[in-house]
Image (cartoon, rainbow, N blue to C red):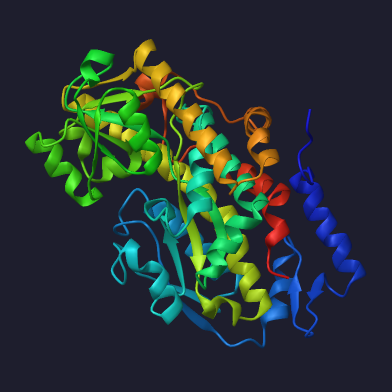
Length: 423
């Protein structure tokens, strides 16, 4: 079996940081221009000493959360608080919720012209500008779909594929931005329908809102008609019956109240789980590279560990809210029947073949995806994360705030993300 990259337990990683600090002047890393940084896991007093003479900075951060009270804002709060704490209050993130500065179509421009310093972006909506991103997202099918283990595995897989793809990083840099986290899982995709559409006959002629090029092909393969529709228009379209279903993520759907008008949540098997569930990237503008090295490292570390840990919590909390809303509206959580599930799997295979033809992702990386998925699923379970019940009863067994994913995100960062940490 293929081994994990740099598979070092977290406690040992911290110990190594201390050993290195004893060998290289308080654990400092030094750039060729003499600027110093610090090892991941270095003691706080070491960081405080390193940044003591640096000027405080305020950076504008635009997350995906619509408001500070959004379920998606857990990650935003955790990231900002971790940055402020690690920087001893010298870095402040000024948060612009609800795409207040720039819509997703304008985020890259806003990063480049300085209106935003750091932003969560959805490159999957711009496949022509980010073809490698779209290819990688399309490749991530056939992985666990469960609310806890499935979400955790996808978070790890997204990080792994994003860091292993030089082409993806180059794609962002060509747009003038720095990828802090180039590929982030943002929740699984499900069918949300205004009736219990589980069979092939149910889907025949069905008008279904899609979010990506991959879902367009999947929807066609199950006999439905894909409809490209802005997310903000989805609730009204479902309410009026303009569309019958939406292929969507549950945390964002619950935030918009979509299960109230499309109360049937329909899910696939693990083997045929829908691709293109990775839709987010954390990007920084040119101002990020002008920051002192230690500041860059503080931001990078906080995004990967505290930010990603709380993103998992917010995703699962949002899935639970969707289940609650659906049941409250008289709906249910049900699987696609075998025929439709198989058709989704066939569409996934065709999409993967098309990705191979583009040459945007190496054959080696594509071939590694099934084994990587198995490795990360085992790792997630070894760390003690589990689904405590069936998806249909998520409203009964998931307790928001009870699970801490920090150990997992530290493991992902140590084994995958450190290779591109600023240095």
